[in-house]
Length: 260
Image (cartoon, rainbow, N blue to C red; front, side):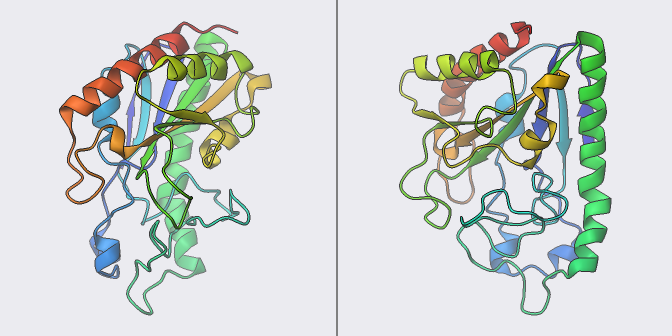
């Protein structure tokens, strides 16, 4: 369920929301909206594949409707006062229920899923970050995400193309976010923001401890930048994706060369 590819560099990619696996006994309890799996970070693993040599990747195949590995294990909200989805979501990003009536998981089931899916992902991620830090003296976690560019339930208007998250500059050294921002500003035809609607999920906030040599930064991409459409079947657009990859590649080159 957890896929780890070990590299020799200082950069670790987290892929928490690309999986589409839902155990049959769970899928049977989802309603039609839930079974669509609309809130997947579609094709992100393909978009990032091969952009940089020596990178380590940690990915879960489980879908976020099974459990969201980018949420706090105790269920604490990351964005108080704003609409969001939980550790085991009850609605999709449009605020629509995803479970059949009476089939919503209870607290005991949520805890069982946390132990079965959330904990192994973070055990693998923590182990790889520690391995990389031991080798280089530091590690950089780049958490890979994407989302539809227009979701009124979650945010107003249209999301910028490139959304950098550092929880207010607390999760990585200033030089890291400055380097990423510089590449994004120079990217012709793309809009970007730092710590806008998405400031970094639990993963970024939990592992980002720059004083200990652990740096974390989240990138939330608008899916309009690389999909043919943000509606089913959420097809990968090779032309759009290659243009976006030409922007992501220098981000990774910069991060791979960064030294404290």
